[in-house]
Image (cartoon, rainbow, N blue to C red):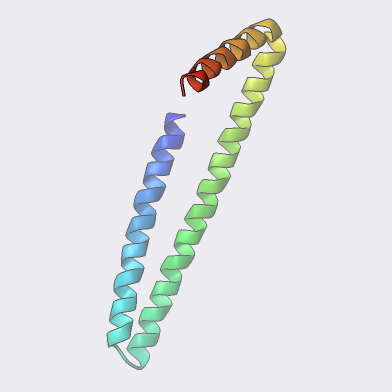
Length: 102
């Protein structure tokens, strides 16, 4: 789980850096003309493409870790059915207490 948090934080930081780079490139492209503007736009497009790839990789990583958590939970419930019922009852009771206070 901490790997997921670290990966998410790194992804957010990487996305901010890429967006800042793209913003700077687009500002420069707006002031530039001709071949220089084309080059700056290409660099911005490449930066956006890299960001999209990183987001896709992060999505795959999060999906895989979520599936692993679901499998582990399913295995635990099958191995300890009465404990799972007790936990579910306790959570339901606590939620009922919280809802009734409002």
